[in-house]
Image (cartoon, rainbow, N blue to C red; front, side):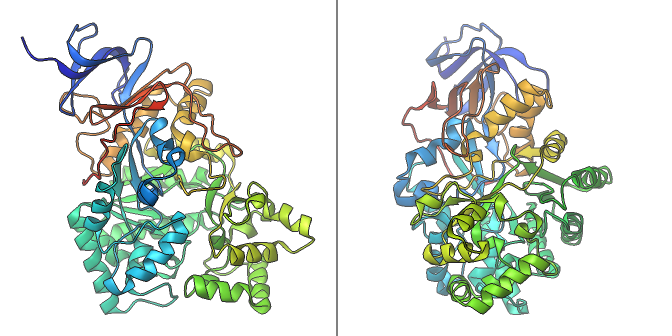
Length: 533
């Protein structure tokens, strides 16, 4: 008689990640690998999960996070924040997005990078010379789920050139390419850019082509937050297409949206363009989150020149009345090549998510704070940034539902939360609610996607995009990362006022064959690792 399996999930309805129809089956795990068995197999196992009436799916792969440092921030002190992803079924997080990663940098730039990372992540998470150093830091603090990281172009630029608005020199670009090449060889998953953020916004197309060509040599994608997601979104998409074509790298568009009043409805043009490119043989995909609000740094609401030189230079400008007047004018009239979120929406659509020293501002819009103080909104934003030393995150209510639904329905769109798990405040609820929200609202309630299509977008399609072999699928020999949920009850509960409420309907989460969540609660197991495609 053969020995028992480590784990058996019996009597479930398997949705295997391939988009094929669901089917009854038992799923067993042994030494972290799966075996699919006939329903009612009667197989023996050390541990059994009864999945009667429940769906068994591959663990969800979050295609877009900013969770680079949360698990290593003081040993993951904020458990509610750290566990929010896995409680919704996410077994793998892909970080290093929007041009921002915790590596790489030249040794002489590491101290400066560490200071910037502390602001971005809300504490001392370190900065590392390469991917190997980053992976070692995570290995030293046991993880509940897996982590994959891209290499941030903005981090590369800051780590070689600094946070300055000027072209890179040929020697600097060669150094950036060398640092990127080393981290990709060590196991980073691709190159990301965030072209609305300093210093990424200071780069021209040629700089990005040179770096994306390095990713292409490794067979890894160029992943981009477009230079504009608002009034110039189509132009920005064409720049990304040019970078992909000239470099040879596959293209992945981050959190695709058409935001701001001048951008609403433009997914009716951007999505057919992407579909046409794919039909012509181009490897291009995107990710999307199921909300009409985004989240970013308050400093990103200012014109690019305001951030030239880094935080100290920004703070000096914010204290200067003349510089404030220039910022006010730039928002009112626009700046060529700048996205201008406030100009496309208004301060009434920008609410404070996290201001550690001013918690009474959290949850209120800049317009509301300005009205209460009888002050100009720009002055309120500037004063807040100075008082918080730049450490202010915001939520921008900038999209419309019809655009979100169009992108969700696109067959090449995968699901990513764009979660920003920063301690304190009121983070965007997408960090705790994205995947159950898709399953509850857009599958069960609205019928926008079938269950099989949605799971495919959350698992296998994402694994293929980022080269995660043997993940995102239930089949013999695949990695034993799984989620068990009730399709009739799964739903997000996180809101903008209570953003970390765990979802309903998630019965169990398994990472590497180990049960890490049972009945909505952590088991205490920490089998997660840093994955290398």
